[in-house]
Image (cartoon, rainbow, N blue to C red):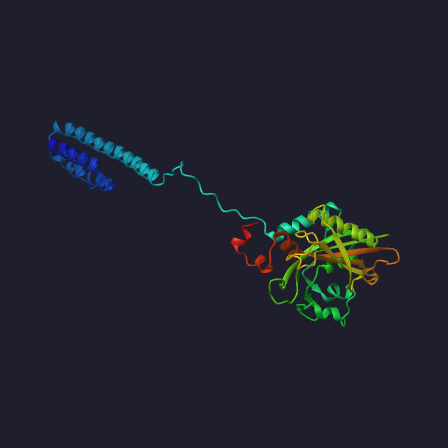
Length: 337
């Protein structure tokens, strides 16, 4: 029996040393309740009283040696598995890294931020209003009754007879005058909607930034001075502007403001279509009826308003000939800004 125990130990140690992923099977084979070592110990009843203690001591030693060999092999296998994992997942820190792709502000957002910053520096505050608007605020309060011919040129998106998508940010001016008494000095940027066919210079969705100043003693000179400062801030200190008479139902008198072409400085070129001037915005003194509709006494207060198309400013700033590029989300285009 002694020789059998030593033989079992030798076999077990050899198998443990050669084990790969069958270590648990080896443990059960030799140390389990039905293992080979247990089977030998069951035969100890046939031994003499002198042999039994010696064989029992040897059997315990064999069990301990096998168990120790299994534990060491398990630690070795664990260490090898970790080493293999680290090797497989090894990162070469000497390889140049890949920078994540970074986005940027949309060119329209950049222009809006720049214009807003100019007007904030001139003492204006920002006012906002709903894009789904009531007919009253979009038209009637602005001196455009239901039968006014100017409504036909707006190509309005009507939701119901009384609810529509705003065609301008002017309703924000009306809402501001209703809530706030003079002095008022605000700009109203935002999206507007008109049922225009999509082409290089038209879109059913575009952006405006309108301004409103109402106080005692406001004159056309204040309007011209404000817009001249704005233009010089936008296009440079050498910018030149001119005002042409025009008609808007909500301002009287009204004007269109042009800036001298910054490419040819008035000589005439392709950019300004040979005219030497580029139309920039519409403006005028707030119509007394509009002030009265908003609860402001036109005998006491006066004001001026203006409206700028942001797409127009952005196209001229960046030399873009097709406004559809702003909305197509083509990264080849947007990444240039």
